[in-house]
Length: 253
Image 1 (tube, rainbow, N blue to C red):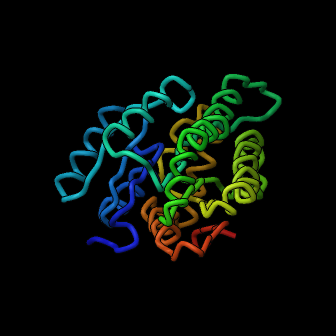
Image 2 (tube, rainbow, N blue to C red):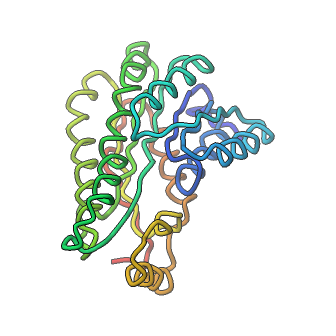
Image 3 (cartoon, one colour):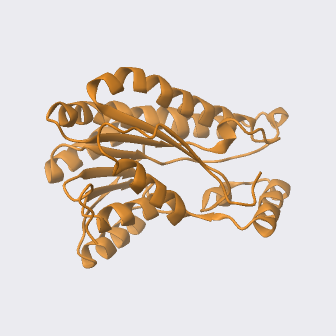
């Protein structure tokens, strides 16, 4: 069902192949937005684009790796060629690879920093001119960064992941000082325990089991719950910026 605040929007969602990204794309497309789906997994994107189109929405699958600048540049061109200027960016792509810091997993540190922080920055840089131009035309313009409660809640063995998310939350806050005066809204969403594929990348069996135990104890949020919040944030009147939202399962402290 079309939503008046979403109907004329052109959105980009990163990490759209699964979890929160897929759910956000669905709710935005259902609201009437044109949605460019960015992820590395072409098959998943094609299937999602077909699903959204079949449901009467508008969706574009764009294979992109946000850790690679040339890939981001090509994705921006594909989005502009198909849809023109973007006025809504959901920066959602992320990876969570916990391990004790003493293990010295430079491979994991690099991957998390390149995706969760530098990758997010690449996407922000790519679409900020679109957002500021849309706002200058009197339209609503949104940048939504999906962070995590790990930005401020301390979990052993998640130090580097938490650091990347703290950086993303701080980046969002600082960006408001640059983009807010230009009428671009910047919002951070920090989910607690959410049922997505994020835990699937953990290579430490003990930590994987520990995370699984949390899901057993606490009824987790669904990706759709986060997507619902994103849709709410971006559908407020354009002078209203819900800048920082923390969303937890009711049973999570």
